[in-house]
Image (cartoon, rainbow, N blue to C red; front, side, top):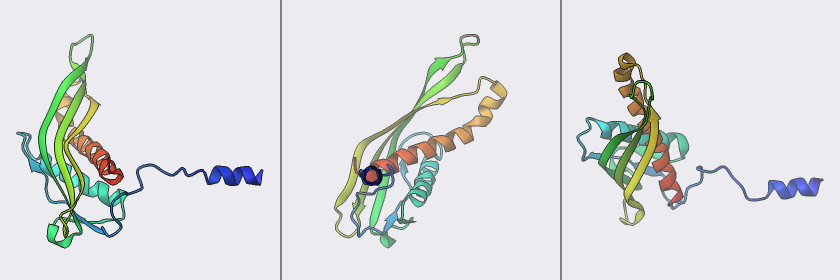
Length: 165
């Protein structure tokens, strides 16, 4: 019984999303504001803030805004953000679910050597979000909806960077 328990305990599985494949010398990551190439107002601020929060909550790295004070720099450009209706209420014909797609270019590089540690010129985040069918609350949902989008985007991007996919 004890041998079986030890075998199962040492099977090599671990919690996903916590490991980092970045070089061990990286202790501080700079995250300057993302560049917004869309017409969506302040989306770069929301996504940058969410990236910083996600890095702080999920990793051991210290996060700063100034690239000169970091071991590595995470830069990105938001190329597009699109929303399209994918599910409609059969009674009213109003949209009940939107598919939001954010297309970005992201690069993490070592500040000293300029070695690229992670690069994705076509990082696409795509997620469905339910919308309210109540017109009065629909317009009040935009702020919280953008916050959810930013959090989900940052979570996926940080996982991608840390796991080096």
